[in-house]
Length: 280
Image (cartoon, rainbow, N blue to C red):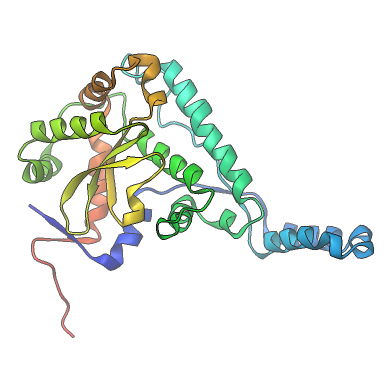
């Protein structure tokens, strides 16, 4: 069984598959009021040339509300994944590493047009056709981590069921073969990075490795599953035994329910079998 994806719909589905919440901190009226009281202050009028940069920043803020990125709560308690992933690991991984990416991104985009984009838009624009902008790494890491947290569940692990199992089997012969290929890819990722199960443009499933903060949405793939293979994801629990961590991830943590829901959302933008072409 194959899925065919229309090129036009791919950008839409990437945003639909994972909805990233963000909070608006300033409204238009407040920004306008602030501008009247501060941009044209007596100090600014006394030294207009020296205050050009400040005026530009305030004018940018007035044009649209500002979105500040937040450290989103985990979808479970810190100790919910024990004994396979410890509370201590999540305290450091989510509470410190992930938080640092959020804090750094907010500093990097403050006062720029980028701060009014949602996270998916920011990742795509920051990738800049393979010439990443300075804030791409932090934006990509936030996106990847949020997707990773929701790829696990306290009741996860084991084989998927139903349509998802059929699709995996049709692309990898069997679930067992998929699991072996997935673990092999994750075990051979040199250094830091991520390993994904994605839905490609041609409707086929693929196991994909990305280094550092790179994410497959920049190539219009639809991500269904990811495992984090940065050392801070597993070192406290498994030390240098990455293969053991990967086995625990598939056997006890992976949320096939979340993967199935992502696939179901993607189906709204794909055709089964032969592509359907509308008459001209």
